[in-house]
Image 1 (tube, rainbow, N blue to C red):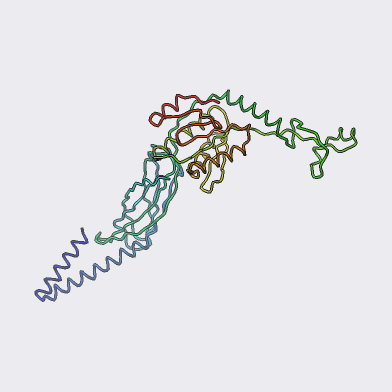
Image 2 (cartoon, rainbow, N blue to C red):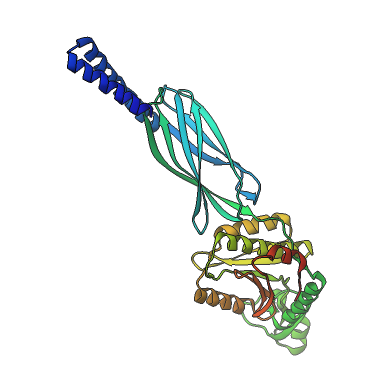
Length: 364
């Protein structure tokens, strides 16, 4: 509006000066024109010399809580920034729902400053916070110049602290049984139990030689031990794309999976979380306590991706073959169901899943 008024006044003065041939008025009109050009050049230089950096104080937050960040500014021009506006965009991945927030401020010449902002995410998952553009005005606020920035940071938003009730004793008993079966059928090279004895093969370590039996048989014999390992239940993020997927559905999925994992942790059951990235590679992290829990789910939400039905099934079957028959494979699926191997254990409803999560028991 100021720009329009300025141009209108300048035009009227120039028109009157030309109509009545008044040299003083004509000189004033020319002076206004030169002044306007100088203001326009000033705002262009100001915009070019103003450095803007996005700095997030945290890399994760909780759904429903305020998440704060700051914008660091450095004005390299000797004129102050009397008025500026920065566009900050919040984009929820992967569905691209965007919100734009405008932050206004001022900055002295040859000075540095900070602008703080906060947002309250309503969905769990990954939020991209992006500085889209900045617009600065001249010292009189007449001319403005906007330029793109394009800086962005990713932030993980954890869901509410729901916890699924776990039948811990039953799961621990099953893990002990599975571990015994695996030790009896899998060879290793360290104690505790001997798996089999066989003639010594070149290249085997000396520590596996059964010296007493070798002396009795007059032939080198080796001991092969049962494989000593700690079996942990596996929680696999089975992220097959579903029809009519939305942020609400993805939010419910993260609440369900993390509630199950939290239930394992609070029941004293260490477990493994496995997911696939964009290149269909498997990633796994083990959870033994709260710190592992936060780091695991931060990475899972950042890097796990949805798959089409055929690809997801192929990856799931590959994981089954790799784990073998002794390790329990629990898969959390995006239709809000939980499976053990190929058997559906729980199906949550979309409307009441939070209440059902807190009331239902998970057992094997």
